[in-house]
Amino acid sequence: MIDPFGREVNYLRISVTDRCDFRCVYCMSEDMTFLPKAEILSLEELERVCSTFVRMGVRKLRMTGGEPLVRRNIMWLFHALGRHLKTGDLDELTLTTNGSQLGRFAEELVEAGVRRVNVSLDTLNPDKFKAITRWGRFEQVMEGIAAARDAGLKIKINAVALKGVNDDELHDMVRWCGAGGYDLTFIEVMPMGDIGGETRLDQYLPLSMVRAELLKQWTLTDNDYNSGGPARYVDVAETGQRIGFITPMTHNFCEACNRVRLTCTGTLFMCLGQEDAADLRTPVRASAQDDLLEAAINEAIGRKPKGHDFIIDRRRGDSGVGRHMSVTGG
Ligand code: SAM
Ligand code: SF4
Image (tube, rainbow, N blue to C red; front, side):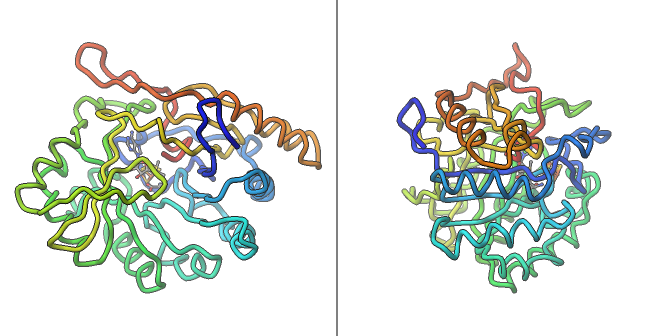
């Protein structure tokens, strides 16, 4: 699948549920209204859409959410999609998780063919963890990460850089990830969805400042490693691990974008930072054959936009998109 700007689209991210067992302050408000069941694609429908994408050229699938591991019977979907790894039609099946359920599922994920997992963790301080996630239990996530490591999964930690929250722990996080053998990626907070009370302007910490702080203690060397995503990487000489920086606010990485995003209602977003979307649920439910679905996917890829233009500044406030990150899963 090639988009109008000549970019090959070979990566699909799927938000399998909009629900979550946490309420992270930058992601959700505390009293979220979730989607009614009838609007949500069944696991069988999700499997059909994903498999159609694989047939059309997608080589990498990432389950996300909401929290993907709180969707009932989600392991069925991992096992069902894992068959494409065995045939060689898919290079990677993976997920982004808050880690709370990894203790239960790490081994089964490996059985399904998952080899790497991204775990979101913004702090190593249990009190701050509670303040950020509102409902999360730090110990449970630590146990989940340990279970994932013991099961043989390669782990990458994703941390959203939050001004006045985790900016005093950056070195600790680098040290901890180094000791555990985990790569670490910092992410700038993006203006997506109402979060009640706070504004993104209060939370926003440009990664240029994170990098400047890290340089005080670590030897960072630019690395052209490309995980197929928007992160730019450096090697940390002292730990031997990599650090990635995802900078949607200060650097536009759209020129190499290779991905589209499916929500749990079957809506396909061709760009995280734009409102335009295509409805895939109607063609899925209209016919048991995949012709209508394939046509809808082709039509959608044909209007993938050039890029996003997020803005957070004092004059204009948050100027982003109305939907929450949990809709598309980041
Ligand atoms: N629940 C899973 C988790 O937390 O990893 C998967 C979904 S979560 C929406 C995916 C990623 O988006 C997490 O790393 C989270 O920190 C990040 N995220 C959520 N809201 C964000 C925002 N407004 N700006 C930047 N990153 C955000
Ligand atoms: Fe849930 Fe992930 Fe959003 Fe936190 S970032 S509220 S864990 S979906």
